[in-house]
Length: 188
Image (cartoon, rainbow, N blue to C red; front, side, top):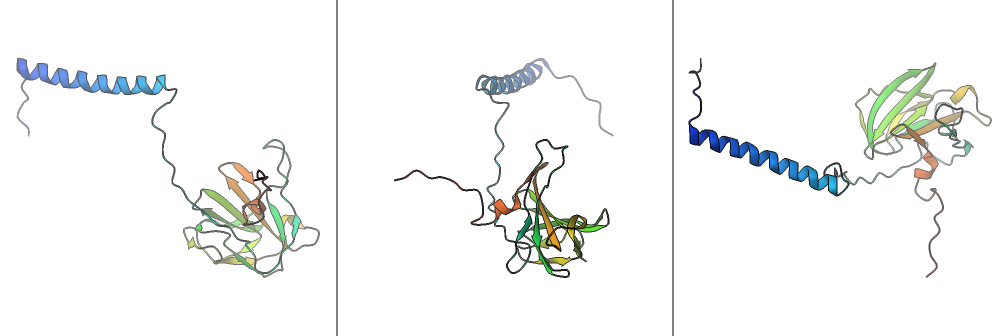
């Protein structure tokens, strides 16, 4: 047990009050500075991560169905790309990351990998034995193509590769070196 506490004597009480007042003043001054600057607080610093992507299949592939995002998130569209594949072909990690899901969704095998840049790749149809939590490096085997994506793709079988940044789907093809969007540079 602790001995009963005694009230602070006059000088100690005044000192404690001044310390509290000083601390509150510093905090309010910092908040006022941020508000005057139009900032909610110090900006968090995001780590600079460079992630290099590769095709999730070996050999030459064709895009059988391109990325076709919907105008609104709830509308129909194609939120990834379908790549020509062979049934039983090796599916590889498109970039370094961690397997976050490996299971069946609507009758098809799906593998999802969270990459170091925060993007998430999902590949289907894939047969795999990897458990969630498996760390992978770009090019590591994830499993094999198991049938055809989306119940049939002209030119199939195909591997569907979707990539999300948060809740927004992005074009996986544009993440590949040399295949991204065309950028015009000024003429020297």
